[in-house]
Image (cartoon, rainbow, N blue to C red; front, top):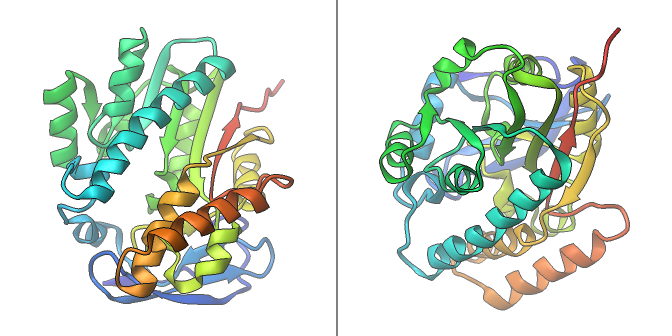
Length: 297
């Protein structure tokens, strides 16, 4: 079953139109449309599978964040780079926050949370996938809850809330933004990382851009649309940081989707060009948004 949104999830405008059509290159090979809001420019997969049917689009041993696969050179490189990026995420959090209670929503198999725990953080995870949740608990002895448990968490109980390439997957966007505001402490920091649909590599690869990843990615953010969304739910205008390695990963995968085989030279070149073109306007392939709650009197 599918559902069709009649209004923009960010600004609620009903003025939406087709932006691009994409195939699910990763798994099902089904065709999906991405529509754009004429008012705010936000892009979203529409129509899309209903929430209780989205799970089947993740059922693959090659879905790295859930399977933690180390088979094949692409997955091996992914695992090596993940260790590097996790250390970078830790340094960013240390720079932006002061408390030690962290909630990672969409924690997958728990590598990031385990690292934060090793650095003295009181770490909690939310993960809807049962197998990934089990791996996080068994391999790292982490406290990881099902997504349905989020409503049971106390108000204002976390100094840091992170969503690393997760918000684009969440079917109930408005509810999730309300959850984030409720759970974050008064001086806490919210950190959201998402692909940037306005990046150079998105424009180069078009319908083959791997970070469209329909229908798993329901939303396709830009700096402007993420800022609008955060401010709508009572967060401050965010600080924005780049994820420079993502351009290479996404471009390599896009080459595979476009050509039917891994094009290493083209992927590396377009990843480099994407980072080069993004320098002045912070328009990188993936972006990190860090925001605090607005103080109300």
